[in-house]
Length: 95
Image 1 (spheres, rainbow, N blue to C red):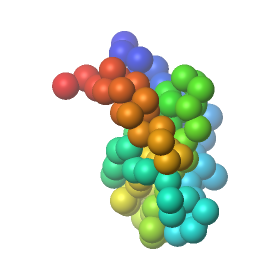
Image 2: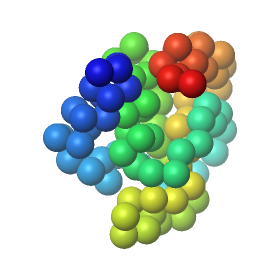
Image 3: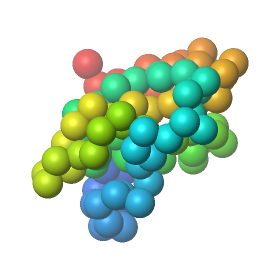
Image 4: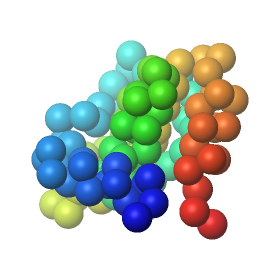
């Protein structure tokens, strides 16, 4: 089982993560999008990976997610932290 699968499984056991996404929140307007996701479970797994590595990160969306917890979800980090976050996430890609 890959690291991503273990993280995703852990997230699904903790809950759906709906309390971990900021909808149209101006506090994060100057933050930088590292990755975009279509579903909350995947986005939350990668968010947790960044946080486990000590990175500050949040999930944001301009609109409410649908009933299946899908939508345009952004994984964002504070300005100046993009390259470190991208390097970490690139190491998790399974492509």
